[in-house]
Image (cartoon, rainbow, N blue to C red; front, side):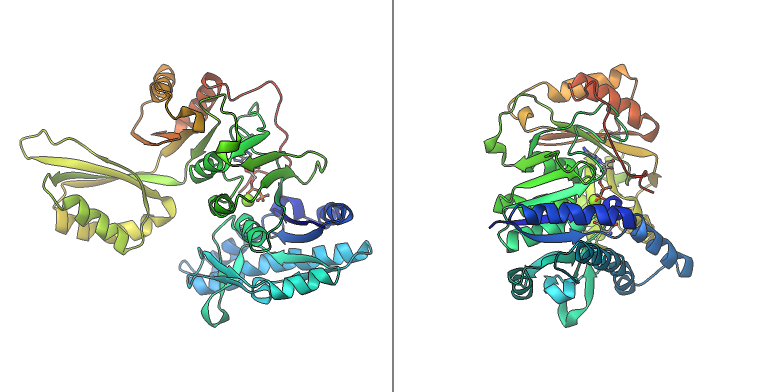
Length: 419
Ligand code: ADP
Ligand code: ASP
Ligand code: MG
């Protein structure tokens, strides 16, 4: 007998009919002769609605209370699914992160899983139960409830799969698999049969929100086979995620993603001398501000100063504003610009290693579309360009065509547009 972990996202459990549909998918896996652990997200837009409610009460909700609030979403769907499975004549029990013993860091709203207690779940499985576990939540010291960050149920599922040495972790969603680009934006994006952990991790980090990046990060060292598949087409095997060394790399670029969650900040006229960049980024780090792209201009003016530009997440803008006076005082900058109208367009592919000319081709395509590049960053298997937000779709479409990422078939996406 094998063990399969299945995860169902918000769209898959959006209403009672869909929960009944999920119950059938779970039982189908049980009837294949497997033990089944199921992880569920909150129903539909429940988490967004809970966030909205909190901000109707206060502009600064405490992170602890946000975790108390948001963790309730998954508790609704897990118990309803257990009832739906019971109703079809099978044994099921639902458990919260606390009841399982999903131990996390001491941090609210973005905690990492440190350890998973296996005793209780094993006992329920051995009694013939399907075990349904609330995604996205855990507990830290003193049994305080924590959450893993938005989209974190994927990570709960993979962490459980690794802890219980499952045969596979299936992530069921409203798409038929991982596509070469977001199929809601690029209707002709192609479904991938297989993608490597390395490429999927880069894609998820640069904005392909089909998977929580930490879920792929967790699966990779354990070589946990993951599938992204549709809860509306159960016979479709979706996309398999495996090691890059197990794949044939035919194309230089595997996928593309756009991320409009960042803003660009430019600090003007910082004296060009050792230690100034360190002062700036230490200040940012002191407020837990994560920086993504960084560019420092070449000092060639008579004042011997240069500009430093970098990007941070939009949601951190208040934290940055609180630092502005300190930055001016310490670095004597002539001006600080904040540019919110940007999008980061990235291409990803393990096949670009040792293949020169991919960056040149990307810049060429953007130039032909008359799109100006504001910042560039690269890794071994990724090239990102920051451009004006109005060009997001044009850039994505042109790059998909140039790198053979689109096909004839129109992608099938079931859910509502994310809010
Ligand atoms: P769930 O609620 O099941 O976790 P998500 O909304 O988190 O679902 O993820 C699925 C969505 O991810 C799709 O509806 C799709 O719009 C988006 N997406 C972005 N990039 C990709 C991609 N490369 N392949 C597939 N889906 C993608
Ligand atoms: N319900 C949480 C969210 O909407 C976690 C998840 O769905 O993965 O972000
Ligand atoms: Mg998700």
